[in-house]
Length: 271
Image (cartoon, rainbow, N blue to C red):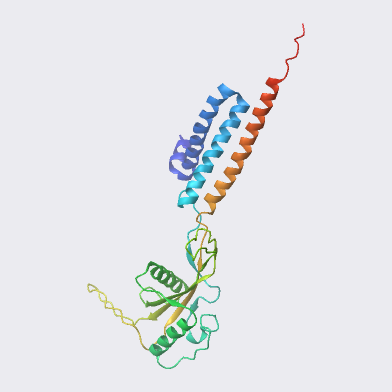
């Protein structure tokens, strides 16, 4: 009774037992049928070959459509020691701007000048309605809150800039791109503006966010991690394919050996 209660309450133990029983029933039943007709060793070899072939097909399907056994999804990662840029005069030191920038006493004018300098440095301004801009802005907001620079509701994302990310090699005027396995580093800069602290009153809707024009904008510098979404399924497909080919070769060698033995001259029987 204690064992049954442990299986019911511990979901990891229950899931492990379900997988073990399912694999034993599926593979064991097929091996039992093949073993009674072909023999234990040949039946095991045929069953193992079929299993490897099935895993190869399943891995190829998962690899193609990005389903099943998946790795890490693409995500934005902070640039080491350069993520949160609170002083705008440090943008050239961390590599965001290609020229020096001297801030003035007008934060709004500084933000406009930095936007122009970013475009001159090769950065592209993304439309705020695009999913890429929204994802980068959300990731930048998370990094900003985790660093403790701002709390939720104390800032607003103004602009998102990106740079790099080109793929290669491309063929036929970039129309054939299914061989573009190599990527240049892809960076993003999220511009945020601090908000004026608003007084909240019970029972009333929160006041409309107002940007604090007396404080300079801040920037979040990120790099794109492409992840390894299809790597596990690719490894499964390739390894299963190699095992399947090796087992097929073993079956072929056995068939040749059996054919040679059957075609040989029968030895005379001894009394």
